[in-house]
Image (cartoon, rainbow, N blue to C red; front, side):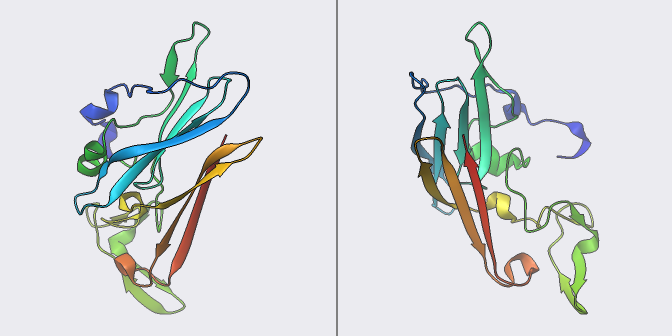
Length: 180
């Protein structure tokens, strides 16, 4: 997001909908979080521990939505800027917590070369391409695999970007794992 402004929805507190387990057990669950404009279902995964830490991640953009924990008075707080609905992520696209790619940062004029071959990707930030262009990894629905072991729980996300997607070569398999 340019200019330091924050979308209005980002200031909205994201309520915690489930209590954490007791007795040192780790837990993980998933729930529907809506659908993209082209009808692809998006899931939200919630995982945490009895120590009060709870993480919520979305399959949309392999996005880290919240990390919450209790303060000394038991009040839960998130330490991330996250948005409350999928519609907010789609409409406002601030990159909050999202997996950026194929390239993080700006590519001047959307042009680059590898081994003497020139590539042009779509621009989406003035005359530059930002974070993989207008349809980067942050706007893709990733495949999720639950990690549930005695000592950790979490989600492993992966996405396959085909050769030529957004002008980038070659096919790329992108893993992202998050556990607690």
